[in-house]
Length: 286
Image (cartoon, rainbow, N blue to C red; front, side, top):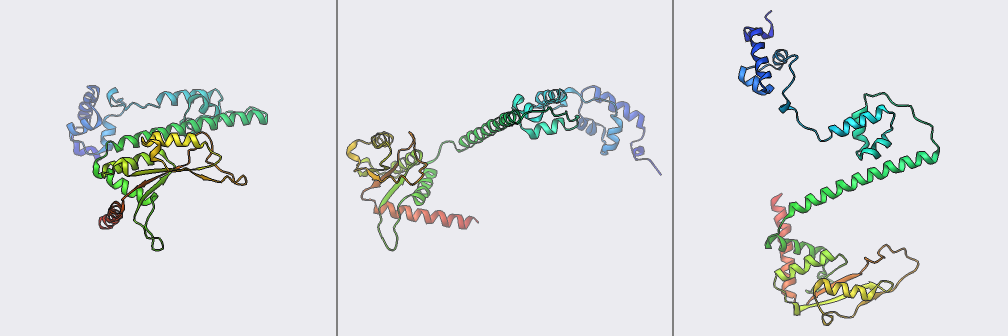
């Protein structure tokens, strides 16, 4: 029975060529293509004992961390201590040092063990927070500058989710939007400018718990929408129930802002029609 490398003729001669090419700095792929070798086993035998050139070695940003983690593990450090020291996840540490002998655990008091575990958890939370920050930053950059059409569709969906709508038992075609998120209000205001709603058609009202900073909230919303006091109606105060455990407290609590558009029946119909256009567009796409 013929050997697998017989098809390549002079194996030793081929090996000399492969070795020379390897030492000249060629990669495995380049040698394979140059010598027309289509068998990986043969290629492995031809290059046996020949190290790859430096340029083919992919740099790994975690090489230094891996080396340091292994050094610390050999010194008897636990995963928790290594995590606190290097700021990397326990999963990565486990992969890097799993072939090393497990160090003997020193005897610690419950307080010491709890403190080490707490530091490890804090390191994990810092790592997760950095991952969240990077993900949000990348997503923000993906959006970029919005076209008028994109802003229009966003505004329609925003209104249909958060704005008042005509109902069979209460038929009214009037544009009224309420929200506690300043960014939502800013987007809606930009949308109103896009569709040609002038400032004189806008009326604002603040809704807030009576236990909140009422005057501070009124100033905040007025500055946000760029309107003077004449554009604001009377603030609605919600009675405070001491038995409820409210979460919306603190200096960032400013209640909700109601934005009403006068003479807005045609605009409301346009919003409703555009929303159903979005629904039909999604149906046709699927």
